[in-house]
Length: 149
Image (tube, rainbow, N blue to C red; front, side, top):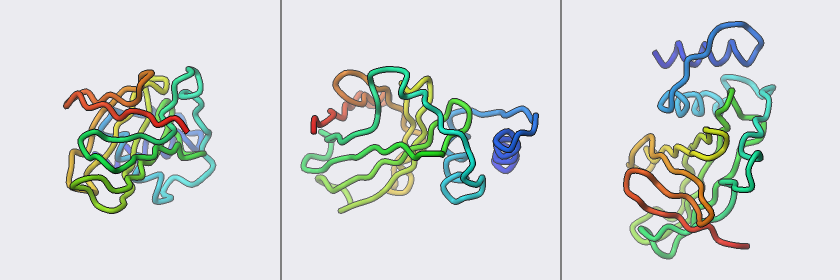
């Protein structure tokens, strides 16, 4: 099923009329395919997150892991339809690895993000929404406050 989704996304990017079927879980799969170069680098940048004044890009703290920070970066030229690929760099914090990088997908006109915490043993599709204070995660009600730099 994931191979079929990746094939559909690839066909869509390269101009074929194949209908793309995508849900949030498959978006994370697409992220993995894109970041490993399976889809090439000639994809169109999706500016959805630039439609509002709020953006996920930036530095955050995590109250669940004091002392660390999280940096969200949009990956240029890595988008599929309304899905903009991103990464989250984690830098320490209590009970956390010293550093790690997690794949992420931004969607819903740049208002929602899914982060794959699988590489550090967490959930693979953890959803959050952007607000004026930072990123609010829906399943545990945690808020990553954005750091003003």
